[in-house]
Structure formats: C-alpha cells, structure tokens
Length: 87
Image (tube, rainbow, N blue to C red):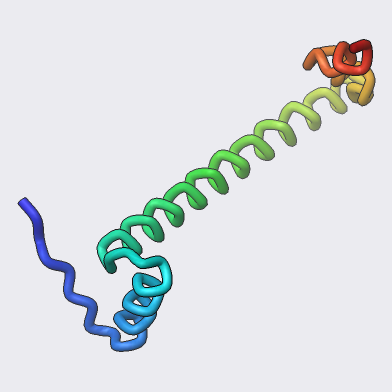
C-alpha cells in the first residue's frame, strides 16, 4: 500500500523539483536517493563513533597495564601490508 507524501514547504518542493529536472528523474527517485544517502551517512557515522569509543577504551586499558603501543611496522605486519612491499 502506497501513501502520498505531501510537501507543504514551498522551498523543499522547488528544490526537489529542480534536482529531479537536473538529474532527469522523478521527484520520488530524488527523495529515495537522498533519504538512502542520509541513512547510510548516519549509520557510517555511528559505526565510526562506536569504533573510536572501543579503540579509546582499548588504548586506555593498554596504557594502564603498561603495554606499549603498536608500531606502524607491527600494524602493517598484522594486516599483511608488509607483504605488499615485497612484490
């Protein structure tokens, strides 16, 4: 079941219409793309935030325990990046 979306804001309506014309597509497709992109951006930002929170906790705990930070060479070795230079 589909439901109509009424855009009451004249500026938003103009912008969607203009972009649809520039992209040679429909207003529905423009809204679909913009909404998907906004959701992807938000999810990516949340994942990045979570990653940095975890990385900070790990680094803090390692520092408390006196564990030395991983060097670039060690990090490259762990990820196999050191092998790329050999070829």
